[in-house]
Image (cartoon, rainbow, N blue to C red; front, side, top):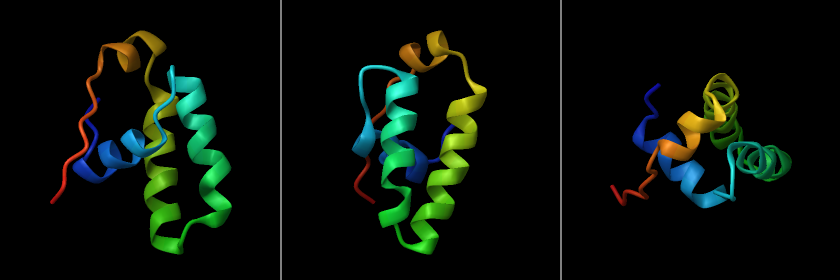
Length: 66
């Protein structure tokens, strides 16, 4: 599964020790996000929910300053 640059940046911002904790951190921040950012977060969460923990752990996320 591929993440867009924007999704990877979001994951980097909220990255925790594992997929479940990272998803939880993003979900916890949803109420404070703008509408556009929340849409990106939900899209990212859908992808995080769809991958296995081992795939998440093998993925290397890099923050990209565009």
